[in-house]
Length: 155
Image (cartoon, rainbow, N blue to C red; front, side, top):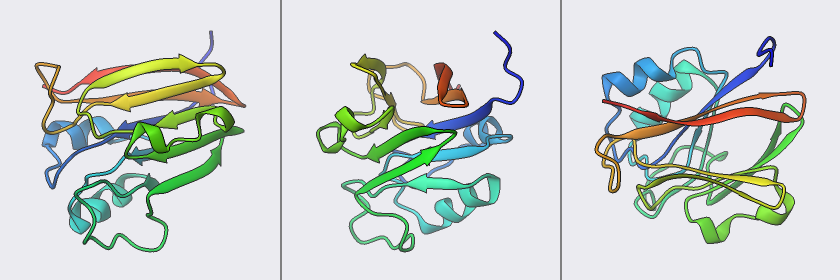
């Protein structure tokens, strides 16, 4: 399968005010960054926006943060002819109407398919629970197709 023309979406969650050098290096070259909440730092949001366009949501630890009007509890958007939904909690995702659904909160990386929807939890890029190292997810998409989705271990 050719990856020519594919867009790279890097997915992170639960960074909790810390963006490691390894994470920042891994994000370089992304076409889009998705953050599934608990960023807890306006400066981190600005730093991510300097790398690539960001779609982010509020997590349970972001309640007093102000990342701007585009960051709320649920984010639904289209990218490369795919419908994405992002929420911190899995139960808040409209899985039935999404091609890709992204959540965080558990600090446990997982990728599952529910019907036609690919559900991605990248784990925590800062404080993992199940994995021995922090993680993120990387998705390649093109023309309405998910070409690949992988959990990337950081460290």
